[in-house]
Length: 100
Image (cartoon, rainbow, N blue to C red; front, side, top):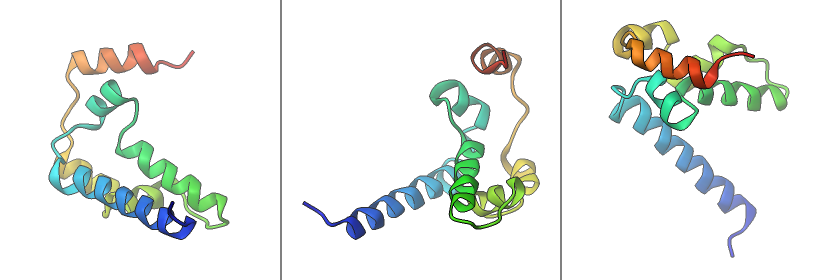
């Protein structure tokens, strides 16, 4: 059985590996496709990062959370890696994630 500190360190390493995979190894995986397939994307991860910081009393807004996760301003990431969503991807997103 592992101790709590070891568990936290392993979880942190898994997060960093996921972040590296999404940011460096697979920047071609589009956020909308991730949302359509998995129900979360890089923006969700950056929001969860921001929420975790805020819960610990660290002031962080949406842009700061995105920059912390993306490793650069979000607009820069979008310019480098994001493409326009296909009509099919947008329709699938709207069908699954529409606001009621």
